[in-house]
Length: 406
Image (cartoon, rainbow, N blue to C red; front, side):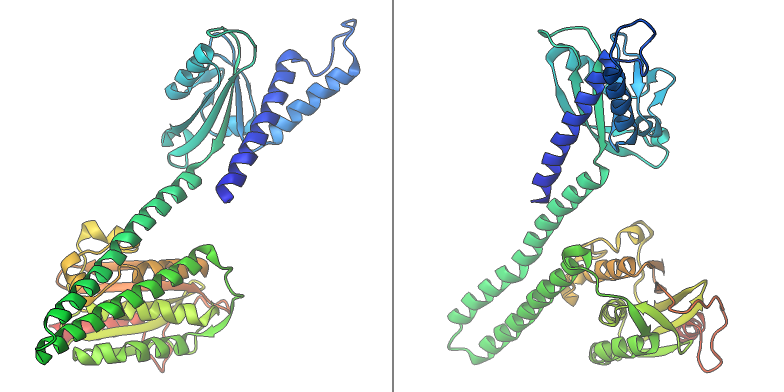
């Protein structure tokens, strides 16, 4: 539905722009010269048309028969693709020549980052001839450029998401089917049936967790409006997250040490923040060796509460650190299969942080472990970096963990 609305909107905008450009090209003077005989109404129309083009978001260019720019609205010049009367993007010039040769053209064009100044941008371009007649025909050509960078990114993300979801769902569903068949064939062997049943329960739990996290991620990405932010006690969030991961940690003999500054309050949604910290702790438990320690703590810094989770796990290779927050991305696919991970936990943390006006980052060294830091704006401005006397800063807890490794 949104795609259809965008298409209709684009067609309407294109028609309005084309009409305004034609009016300006045919009546380029804002004020008629004395004795020209042109009625004041025509000059008024030209003024309004130029004002319309100047105020519109789409970038509009008109090039004459020599490919010189004779009209460029502020949006076009703001893209940095016009210098004096020259169009600086060769692909746009090729599109202009194609329009002259065969009529109207539509295409997506990548604008170089060094021209735009904010990184590469993708624009949807509609090129039209402003003079009627059989092609090819020389004459002015108008280009209407609409920034579609975000739209194309969302489309690519959606395609990848659907493909990844299909792949991830296929694995546990296929495993359940095979295990059910195996159980039927081993009906006379209770021990084998029990083993297969335990495996089916594991796969069913993995499937349920995947579906649950997909729903959570969909909500965080805008399928549902974000609830109103309210004061949230960080100590309560940490206690809830530790409680949720306590059983998994105990099963591996892992101790969770809680420290840092107490009494911090952030603005947010308590359930979402608890889920984010739980995911960080669960990730630390899954990738830490048995009988080790995990540290979690908070501190106030520059108006944010920084919640740090430090483990003594396998660490993350340098080339993978920038991608660990991507959906379904796993550093070690075989290990993730063994731990039952879905590849969505850290993506959920990233979206929770973004929805709260914060961020999440990672420090890691292979063989030494990792520290994930979640930054959430404080409810009351507090730029003090000093830990509360009753607690420890995350760095201090991490330091104790490092001592335990040596």
